[in-house]
Length: 154
Image (cartoon, rainbow, N blue to C red; front, top):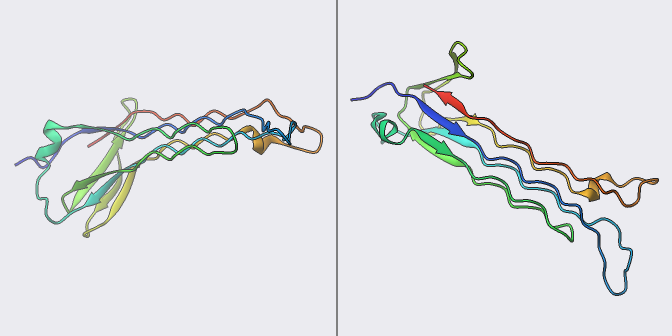
């Protein structure tokens, strides 16, 4: 029976915002219409009473969430990345370390359904519609989606 293991998780990156302008037959200068990027998916550990060992993590130690989609024209926002839920036994302690630093306890799952977000997805970038002002009517600017990094857990 395995009661200690190490996993690596990576949440999804946020999607990029879009630079786009609305151009239609009756609206030749419709202004900016760039949509926002979607948020990246999270990695969540969930306490489950039907699981009593960490054996499955010995064979599958990597968990990766999906990225958010990029924004599109006509103010269409990108889709958010799906959250990955990983079931673990009740009583699991979650330790984190990054870049070979000392380990740090971030939580313990002691009740059925308890959750800990171990990797937060990146924020989606804003499209150019967010950067309009009274003096800057047609911004050529959009924000890149948030990037994430790999994290190890024990």
